[in-house]
Amino acid sequence: MYINLLNSLLMAPPAGGSGGGSSVMSFVFIGGMVLVMWLFMIRPQTKKAKLQKQFGESLREGDKIVTIAGIHGKITKINDIEKTIVVEIAVGTKVTMERSAISMEYSQALNKPEAEVKK
Image (cartoon, rainbow, N blue to C red; front, side, top):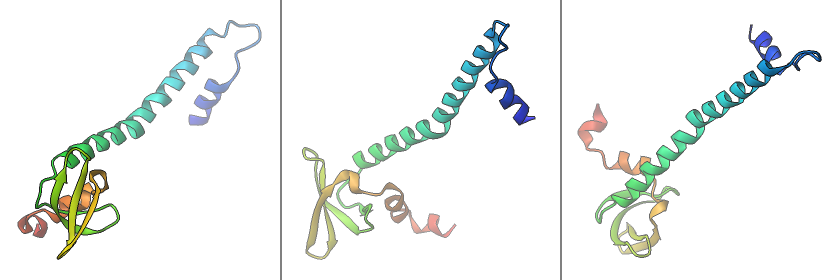
């Protein structure tokens, strides 16, 4: 069934006919492919980028975080002008890094109350 539909979409119009119907089907097929690509690839990626940006803006001093590299620490200072944060990774050891280097998923899991984690 699918092979017949694909063959009919890809077949060239007959030499003597106008071929108008086949070109319309080709445009519908290409439009459908673009729509599917947008729904399954582009839209979720932009949605995730928006959530990551909101997460980065909502960071506060004292929050426990995990970086993309897997380093655990606590935010001690936020520099809004340079878009950097200072993270204490051990007692007396502080590192300056970009806000975008914070992993949203692991940081949120780290900050969940224990009652939610046990469920």
